Image 1 (cartoon, rainbow, N blue to C red):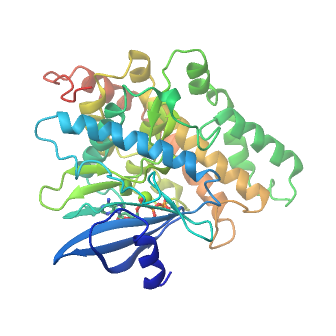
Image 2: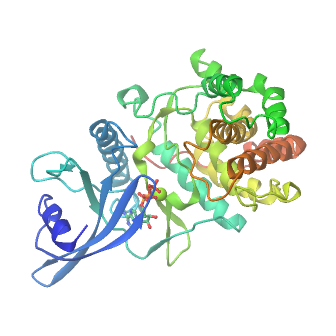
Length: 379
Ligand SMILES: Nc1ncnc2c1ncn2[C@@H]1O[C@H](COP(=O)(O)OP(=O)(O)OP(=O)(O)O)[C@@H](O)[C@H]1O
Ligand SMILES: [Mg+2]
């Protein structure tokens, strides 16, 4: 993208003033992100411009409809809540001059733009309990702000995203074909997968049977999707809303457990190093429940510890399936990397199984924690 190209995109959005420059911030898996500056009679403003990868998201228009609905809902609540700053605590989309909140370029690229949140930073990997606490609190708050928006009013932009039984069926099919003759090498991981098959349907069954509610969930709850305030160090805003859609709160919490409570690399080969750090889990759950305790049902609370195991197992199963299939989905930088990733995820599941009692006690203590106040956000 040249500056000239970006300038053309800039003028498609309702920004006062002139284009004053742009820089590429990040080429991500899904988006290319630019920081764009405007100049209005000497006053400079910054914006984020993102080009959505429509090869990954087949239906950017539905994705943007979700995005708009979510951010509008959150903003309306923040506006009614004393002490909140709606310009910093949610993403604020710019209007496109053609109407709506996105622009389609002549070569069919989809663009969106929103206000840049200044004086903030990203934490790439959680290394301290305080960071895990803040990440948990940020996503708990995000879910809470959306807990009264009808989940069925959003589009399911990636169907069957968290459907573990479906992922398991696919794994079996790929294993049966074993087109790359890799099953022998992965015997240990395959045995682990079959040993854990009974857990696959617990949350999908609970959702289907109405025992846990369908909610609006973020679905990419890595800590690097939270902006932290430079001054206070506190989480201020959840970003990267591309995968926000109907789901279970347990998927979000489970993926946070998977990504913030272990210090080992995703493809760690020394499996003795792959373990859940209880301190990190306690902090994460504490932050999450600070916001989520008053809207989660007892059934959801009962499944929090399990959700960490299930999501970690599911990701491991996907790595294993991809290894067997010849590394077609997850990019590899060395041979056997997807098998190592699968083994590391499964080792983390084992660690969670060994620590189940301690994790349960953590949640019990947090559930009983005195002084949790009722929601401060108004509908
Ligand atoms: N409103 C914002 N204010 C300040 N910085 C932002 C804002 N939105 C995004 N960023 C920055 O841009 C980066 C990329 O944003 P985002 O997370 O939406 O896309 P992404 O991580 O590239 O997506 P993916 O990796 O899934 O493709 C963030 O890590 C953050 O540094
Ligand atoms: Mg991101």
